[in-house]
Figure (cartoon, helix red, strand yellow):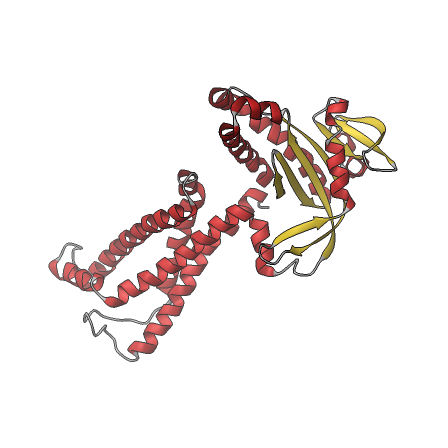
Length: 359
């Protein structure tokens, strides 16, 4: 089974391979329609053989290679560049990789066809004609457009969330849907004191690092970031048996991940951020809202209740509070050290609620 991280990366990598492959097949069919029964390119005299499969496979492999390079390497290298700079610089780099790859493949395949050394004058002459042809550069332009679209999709996905953009494309929440969801309200401790100590600009940088360092844990355990509210993150999961465990594991892994970066925070900001959280589940109505700016909205009492639960962490001097709904749904029950705190009155609620701490 794929982990949540692998699934996410696979969804981001696949367009880099599939889109160029589709473009390649489409272009091959258009080219065949233009050249008809010709067995050579009129502009260069180079031989022409209609075979859309090989170029498509080359485009697929090259696209996937670029996708892997993008997701695992260059995306981190350009993380602090602007949206436009990322698209332009990456397109230039990948365009260069494509040109180099085509040159090597063409040189070797032409040498094989002529049964000659790759540096043979007639091989080099054929390559020279090939690289000066309008057909090649029109293909490259076509490929670059597809590549730019993939980069655009990846950047938009990172900015508004992968699940959000997929839901927009599929129209899943175009009409309001009622569903069961788990919510975690995660709040930074002593954020006002930290902000006053660092100043607004440096505090904003800390928030950026803080959110970035927590994101890997959220991805690892299949969470969706619903909102950033100042120094608070609202994370959600669909209700199922595994996600009742995933939300707890996510919190614990976030704690561990942040602790592993303690030296970085102390060196850079002279403070070490920490957080507290409340977790609850229940029914919500989910749908698209807005006209000028659309976004997904969850509405339901479960969100207010979760926020109130998180607000009681200081009172009980714990870092994680969960509702009875979450506690009862954890299987096996002895997987965590769960301590019942008794019935508690939540602000703005008439009924008392049994809360539990995980220590």
